[in-house]
Image (tube, rainbow, N blue to C red; front, top):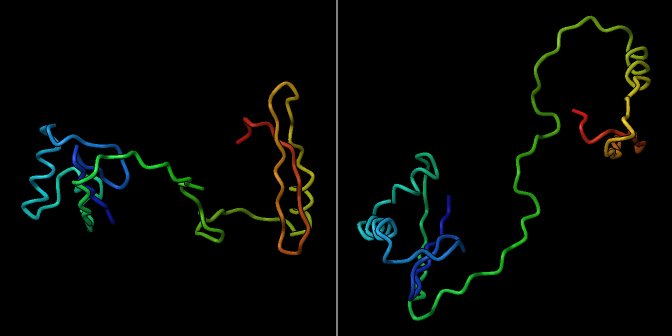
Length: 137
């Protein structure tokens, strides 16, 4: 994990985070660990014992100015297409019958609830569009 420590006239910040005062005992302990060449306990917990690269920038001639928030397009977790899935054991009928039963399976929509449409584009260029309530799982 790469972490940037910026030292300001009135405190320090980590990775464009909030200003942390030099006078706070917890922050003073954090900086003492860095001065001794150790990784502070707070960062060790953050990376769960992994590797930490701590870069430092000296801005002690400047007052801290809160940086503009950068837009993060996606910060969640995702799944890869084709990732391993549990094996489903069943005795399938012919592939044609399976496709028909899946495509013809009704999705019950409650018109009193909010709804949305989901579009799936298939490899052959065709697409499937289905309407769902936002409470469907």
